Image (cartoon, rainbow, N blue to C red; front, side, top):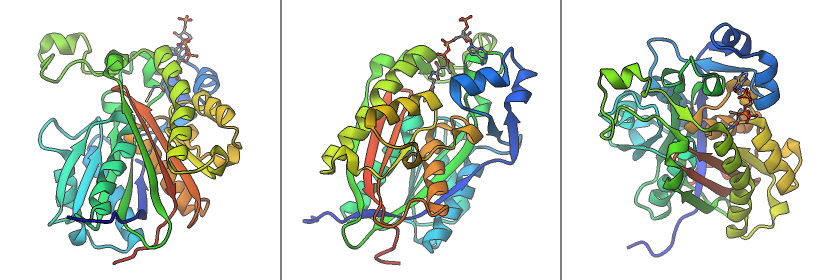
Length: 337
Ligand SMILES: CC(C)(COP(=O)(O)OP(=O)(O)OC[C@H]1O[C@@H](n2cnc3c(N)ncnc32)[C@H](O)[C@@H]1OP(=O)(O)O)[C@@H](O)C(=O)NCCC(=O)NCCS
């Protein structure tokens, strides 16, 4: 039995975005939309699209390698690989098993985590428990998606929003006062129909009618999801900050799920923080679901924006409905290597 929990930090972060850029102009040739509408209503200018031979595990492996390299940790020393995704390579096996094998994480346990766009926040919260309790020392959490395979390119309400990518973090114990300070996770299945892929599971197994009715593609009630997101983003940030023992004004950086600039702007207004304190990259990548928060985090860390000791809040929300947040005092230096 462990009597004292260990502080958990981010030893390394990584990200991978496919090379192919899918611009708003290109989407104008696919559906009845315009560059102007997409920028005004969402803030998105372009997104990335995986190559035909790339699946979610390919993106995840590339991001995971980067996180391990930053941490200076060999793959064979990783204890657990968690892949948060709603676009796994296949229904079976778990994409995390494929990723662990391809990385060379030969002694690691591996599982997928399904919390849609909140996946990285959930995955980090789960992985951190293993480190805090001393069960494991090195946990690799990856958010990875190939959403362009499940987006309906005849539906302008959704196809302009989503893209592909992967972000990763290696969690481990840290010395001192830093690390994850508080976790806030929520779910409400009453909103299950607001953002879903109806077919392909046990409720509606794949057959020719489900394919003809396009039920294997993502469906969304945009207005309801927008309303939900605006309500919970600031609330989740505030809640986790209070749990961490911080004042709202103590938050130095907010790394939000990148779904829509207007949702982020509403959170900025409600929290009374400056735009410079918010990590935003959605104009380049759109919404990459579980990869959204870790890609933004990795870019901010590599750019030197987020540094040792900074108080950072991560917020995610998405299908489920799920939402959640993490409060952390940035601590990247390994205690044990
Ligand atoms: C999808 C979203 C951008 C739509 O923006 P909006 O300002 O709410 O737009 P509305 O849904 O009110 O639609 C307004 C009009 O624009 C149209 N429209 C929708 N998508 C369009 C597009 N890509 N191009 C042009 N017009 C479009 C609609 O058909 C509608 O036309 P109508 O009034 O003739 O019916 C917005 O609701 C949103 O971001 N929702 C949250 C989505 C999200 O974050 N999902 C992921 C969560 S993890």
